[in-house]
Image (tube, rainbow, N blue to C red; front, side):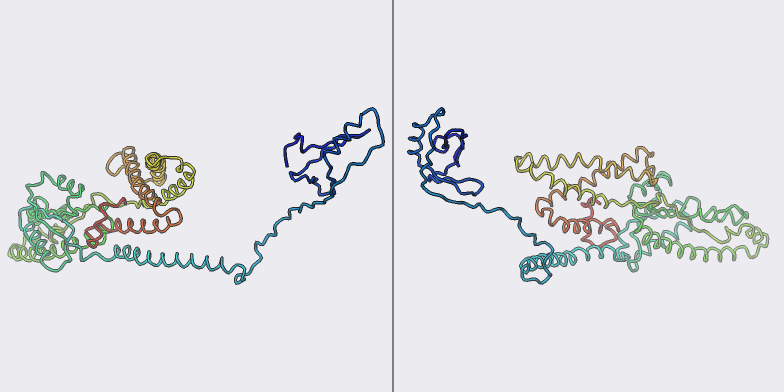
Length: 439
């Protein structure tokens, strides 16, 4: 239809007591009405002649316009499309194609999960395998501050244990002159220069003999030998491997020493009844030397960091959806800056909130520093951890897209949690990649 007001489209029929009646006309000279009723088509030349002979004041008998053609057009009314939702059964032929497409997609996902299962789960379960065969990988020290018979026997027994089998630590004899004090040795264990240390304390042999000779009932036999451990370094390694091996060795060694020493002492004093009576006043000294364990840093709380990976994965997927319309407008350099810079800012409140949860559960942030400093140290650690995990997810999103991010998340979690459960010294050699993992 042409715009209203064009001279060709607008035809007016005028007569006495009549109004103008606009009639729209098609380009082929046939007029139509939107209602679909019958419409008359007028001859334009004859209408012009009739207009010249008519005035508004005179009202002759109107002549009917010359009719050229009559046509009725019926415009079909739009009908609502029928809703076919929830009408078909599972094996209806109408949806057979859709059903096979669905089955194919499910089959592909199942195959991918099977491959992922065989690749990821053996890696995780292998990390949980008993690590007793890897005990010689743990460095430990033995230090003789005594210089007497007890120190000599304990040192010799510890070194001899490394010559048979593999149920022993990597014991190394350290000279007492290398340490300024017992506190200095303990500090070096805290700095993770050794997993454990056995010290034969100063004057252990002479103190034992004096207590027997004078009947010192205050003698503490556990002051002779000390085992230093740091349980917080790795609770599994210290609890399952280092402590059992070290205590078993000390138990065997000191029992052997006491059996020999007590027998020799009784042979020496049996001819002196007074000496026997005096030694009986100190039963602890008569029982012999023993040891005690000092846990320099106990493992007193479990704090799992792999939950942070879940939160960051959600942020990555949601950010990808929110960025769809924007990234098509940005240059490559601007897009890279956006995808790196914005997550680094977003990780600050996430890591701070994650660390603050520990305050409500009384996490011991004062293990090395005071509580305030320890808290912010943990915030910084959590931030670096989330950055390492999150930026890896951002890189994977560029390749896998959101549809397959769940597969990456499973593999990424398994690769990370397979390493911190046990230390690298307690696992097979290929788990040394743990030194480069965030967890």
